[in-house]
Image (cartoon, rainbow, N blue to C red; front, top):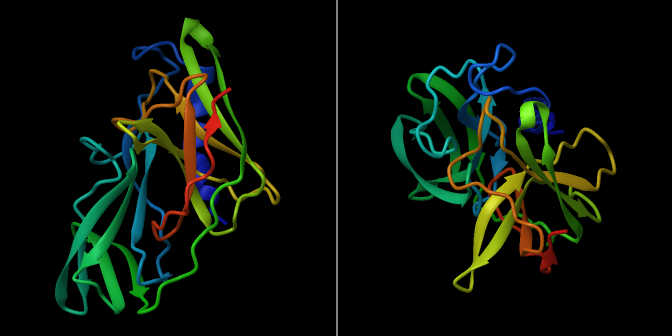
Length: 240
């Protein structure tokens, strides 16, 4: 269960319901920071890595500059330092892979603080299936104090148990460009919707480069597992 993934959604929706600008008495500014999505103790397949997303809160000790999922983590295998190579999967979603590849235990720290301990396997794991997207719906309007907002919800036939994110791709220069992602809550068995974009509100924000599709835009989507491995792309779907 990945209930922690609901925190961004809750914070975002709360911001839409009650903001009055940066100086409002009921509006505490939320700073962005990294959120490690791979669990400590995880056994990571050889084609996977450590997945980091983003979170927003009012008590970030060191607010992120740039993409909040891209952080200066340090890794070691035993007493030997190991380099981590970052690969962006979407704005606010990054996978870290050891280079050279590691088989066995790996410890990750942020400064002097332990973040997680994982084990890399020598074998690859099973891939997630492509999302079966039945609809992508944009809801927009005006919240309190005349502030505009936009919410994009993906409806899917089913959410795989191993999926921790759903990435949305737009087409640009004949390439699939990731523009946003959402976190399946996994706290409601049989859930068939994923909130893939919420914005914008004055109390917080979204990672640089993150945006939702506009009405009429045709996009594709892909699942991501806890190790940063992408599924095949869905069939194109038009935003309603």
